Amino acid sequence: MFKEKIDTTRLPKHVAIIMDGNGRWAKEKGFDRIYGHQKGVTSVRNITEAAAELGIEYLTLYTFSTENWDRPSDEVQALMELLVLTIDREIEDLEKNNVRLMTIGDMSRLPSEVIKKIEDCKERTANNNRLNLILALSYSSRWEITEAVRNIVEDIQSGKLSSQDLSEKLISEYLTTAGIPDPDLMIRTGGEVRISNFLLWQLAYTELYFTPTYWPEFDQEAFYEAIYEFQQRERRFGK
Image (tube, rainbow, N blue to C red; front, side, top):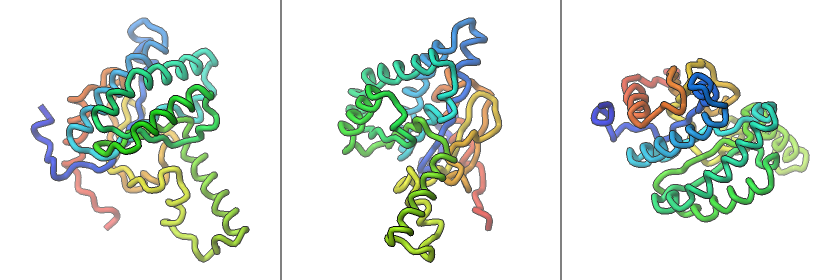
């Protein structure tokens, strides 16, 4: 069991996950894609509980990318309905388990009902401090960086900033992840070995972990294995 092997004094502070493989898992089982997404919600719950129990402070889940808007409309609609249903079902447990919900991404593109549910959940959990659960919704890193550059240019033009103020730290402060530490570990399930427009700026020195396991089958033991593997690596940050 990997949980017993984990050194709790050297945990990653922030773990980010690309939850991939729901559709392929469902297809291999003879179900439609939305069934895979429904089963994936169980994995979200299990991994969130595991992260909180270990003492990880930030968990970011790539929930819905900007590119996902290009999927068939019935699948997008089903995903939005599933998101609302899941928030309704999980809000009490988030409160009980002292988990704070946060979001990053272009929330304006989401349906109004989804925005309302998310904002209500964020407000109700705002004072929780055991685990920060961050959902990347309607998110892409290129969109995020483009928005940061646009806002910086506007502030330079208005006189709030000077071009001499530009620095890596300043750019980080204009990203949607401002105030959130960069991920120490990024996990991708489903067998693909790429980052897919996810936290490109923030992953500069993140340890990457890829597994062929589809997200609906990625259980707590698989998560513990990823944490243990992370702890076997020497992080030199270019030194």
